[in-house]
Image 1 (cartoon, protein in one colour):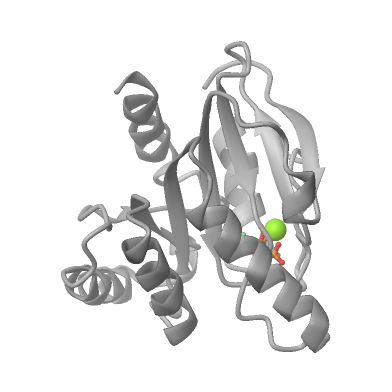
Image 2: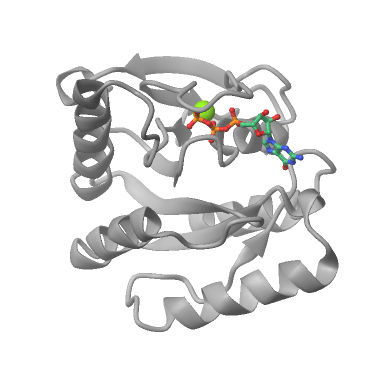
Amino acid sequence: FAGEWKFIWASPSLETLPPMAGMEVAFAGRSNVGKSSLINALTGRNALARTSHTPGRTQELIFFEGPNNGDFRLVDMPGYGYASAPKAKIASWTKLIYSFLQGRATLARVYVLIDSRHGLKDVDLDVLKSLDRSAVSYQIVLTKADQVKKAELEKVKEETQAALRTHPAAFPEILVTSSRDGGGMAELRAAMMRLLNE
Ligand code: GTP
Ligand code: MG
């Protein structure tokens, strides 16, 4: 992971995706769950991905290329479940997210981010079911762990773990992270390095 990560491509639609190359890992999750912040924490670059207090910040598929000759890419995605945007925008984001997640041969893993304070919601379960159906491997990452007490974190982790049992494409282990204090970053990086070396 060490080295220079750089922005390579932004895609507002399925027609403008970059050519498939190397291995891609995508970050999905509800609006404001911390996808862009996690990419910044992972790469050690503060402002690589754009973040915001208000939901709906990331509006395109954003591709970042790793240090090792571009054979590893991270993909930031628009959030789902953001009800305050215009209906047409929500529909187009939803289509973009679902289609990308289902039909990308270079996509090795999807990290589905869940806010530690909120746990799995129905909109999350819809995405998990769709990934199960298309047999795309995914792993749950709890975010903003710095915002909840330890006991609460254990509870949400256990509940999420239990819910995953009926999801065949889910990786059983849940990662717990905080982009604010760096918690869980080493584990997440290690998980990605294992993928790359598979
Ligand atoms: P959209 O692109 O709008 O879907 O949002 P996103 O999922 O990319 O979230 P983003 O990274 O923009 O973060 C949303 C807000 O949550 C920002 O105010 C971040 O500072 C905050 N945030 C992200 N990660 C953490 C974390 O680990 N801890 C805390 N306390 N705040 C976080
Ligand atoms: Mg974002």
